[in-house]
Image 1 (cartoon, helix red, strand yellow):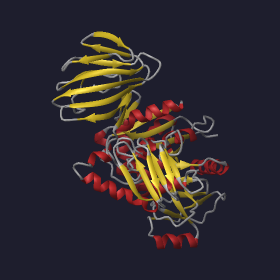
Image 2 (cartoon, rainbow, N blue to C red):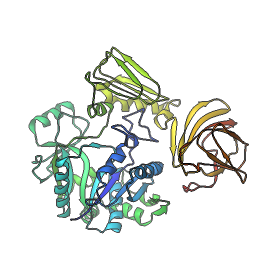
Image 3 (tube, rainbow, N blue to C red):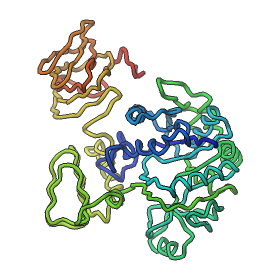
Image 4 (cartoon, rainbow, N blue to C red):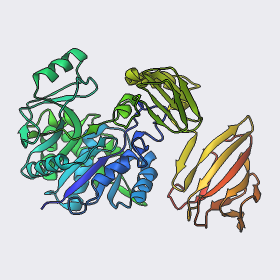
Length: 474
């Protein structure tokens, strides 16, 4: 049987799940439906080596270490992590993955293209549809998975086809843009319309041939970007100059709406793009009052609501149809039934000088060695909590504008200052004067945690001169 090459699209910067999801750590890397992130759950769906080859992940440079770390946590090998140098939508991303897969696995390989931020229930119907789609893709069709609609949804595109669940592969009649509520209701009543899931099964050779015919500029950009790519540790950096010449267009517009090879497999397994907080609520187990509470939360006389906190304890009384999302630096409160409007709120915040950063970064930032949380800051000082994974070390570096104090809270720290190395245990501290060349490492078997106090005239993250770095950031 032909093995399937998974292609996981993991570069999105979704904002509709703000304030949890932000540009620096978007929803695909968050554990929204359990202990594993949506990206990790996607990896788990393609982990069967009897069906799949190792996956190709395409993402952007900012997420490269998150992708590698979360894949390692799952114990899932990857065929490659392709880094998009600029944002150019799904057409060139999939074309680049197809070109890379052709070079790696051959042009007779079959791709299973998967968004990394969807929640999918894997059952017998899922595997039946998968095998039907693979056989059709092997025979030269470009297959999309159409979800049997359960309600008149205005947030998805639709696919019209004479298909039904369990009836195999059928030609696509047409694609329909996201409808208004009236048109969505009409399509639901009429039947023969399916939600466009954004999941595809594509033969590499067939897809590249259709790209050459229907989107030659996209294909040329993708092929050149792969041919001129360079390796960077475990990553493959696609060539920026070539990639940037691609049109900013989705694969639906570029290929599927034009090709004569488009086909659909209709499915009814559990699926959601988790595109809003009400979708998260609908896809989770709720209590008898139809509430979903996550984190330190107390509810009293509350119904049909979603309350999530990753920091402060949130208490809600006497409300219905409420969404409360609390992080350590921002809180969103609104009607759960109007959760689609979070995106508009994010646009407002992004436009404000004092609030733009709330849409970009969390107070906790993750790095390949661990990360840090901002605790307190003032005009000439900043306090952070650093956490370093066992066996990891930060870059050998210096600062022009700040000195630092490190206090070990847990674990063992190996500290190098101007060529001299010492070990610090819990409750010990060290001073790093301005301009010294220093490095922090965790030689132990448990996570190292310490408090860092920075003092100086400038405390920005760009005041780091890296001299050596095992993650290629010098």
